[in-house]
Length: 232
Image 1 (tube, rainbow, N blue to C red):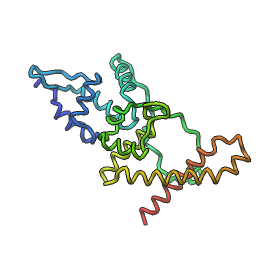
Image 2: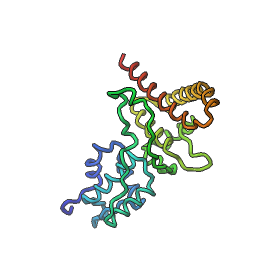
Image 3: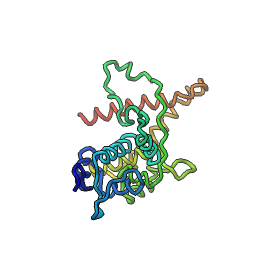
Image 4: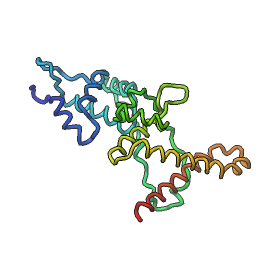
């Protein structure tokens, strides 16, 4: 083996600590999609350089933390191949600030949020990015926990988030049946909020942003109540 080149098994060992859902089949999938191009030894085996591994690391990172579809990742890689820097994606969506704040009043004051990058992935990409099995995704769809965007065959950010969470919860013995209960609870909460704020909206027809602000406040309360229950 040439100096500095690794086998696919060695690449898997290098990346596994940071990306627990990485597999040989996923690395081969990314190669089939043209995102990486490892060398081939005379025997036909793949041989990966350090730059191949860093390319893989970038792909896996933006999939895991930003849920970018392969089309967008390919555009970023093309920019990198031209010597340009890929777009600055900012903090990862999952990097939410801690809810315990030094000043609770400041923490609970609604602030405008920057627009989030739109996500549009195919079913195949959803499976690859989330790490779900076909059977697990079918079960989520059966309970309407993961559904395509209205009128399309593509999945959005919320569907991808539920898919990723479902895959991680599976490690704790939770499946679509448990998430269905969460969905039912969320539907009841939304109905309660809509009923509670209806008089306010009738008095303030221009306050279209209020439901989003109310939902954010309820989410803060929900998280705090869950934490208090878990620590009792």
